[in-house]
Each structure stands twice: as structure tokens, then as C-alpha cells.
Image 1 (cartoon, rainbow, N blue to C red):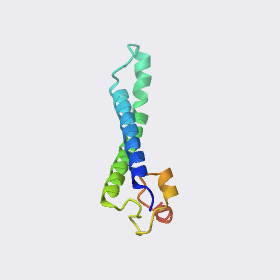
Image 2: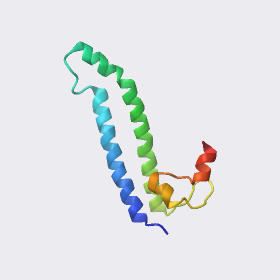
Image 3: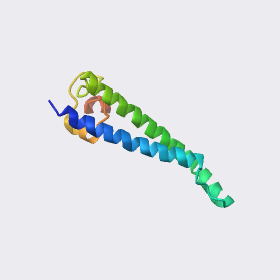
Image 4: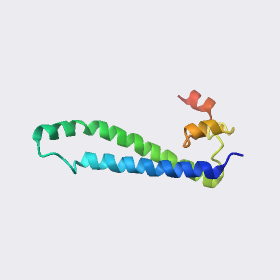
Length: 109
């Protein structure tokens, strides 16, 4: 059985990193440090759409991380939610918040 603590620690570190990114994105969208120059403000506002898209992606990732932490607590972290087969440790090393084995992930894409 793979080391549950190792993956839990990785997920917690990743959760902190994603939360920091979300805070930065939120601050940028709110334009807390907005320039006094009108042309620079216009450019900053054009970037809002990109920032919102990044924020949505990071929110989704944070949700998957929290779900993975719940699966660790429930003892189902290493099991594919679709087919019930084991998720290879190598896949979890690359995507520690993955809930599907490679075959199911490919099939669902």
C-alpha cells in the first residue's frame, strides 16, 4: 500500500499554494494596487477576463484537492471512483488530486 501520509502532505502543500494563487488573483481583480494612469488602468481591466478564468480553474483545483483529502480520510484515496480499481501511485505523484485511474480518465475525456 502506498504511503498515505506522503500524499496527504503533498495535497496540503498544494492546497496552500493554490489558496495563495487565488488570493493573488482576487487582489488583482479587485485592482487594489491600480495605477493612477488611465491607459494602464484600461490594460489592467482587459486582463480581468484572463484572471477570472484562472480563478475558476484554481477554484476547481482547490475543490479536487479537498475531495482528495476527504478520500484519504475515508480510506478510498487509492481507488478509482469510476471502476473501483487501484489508481497507480505514479499517476497520483503527477496529479495527487486525481480520482480516476488512467483508463477511466481517458475514457471520460
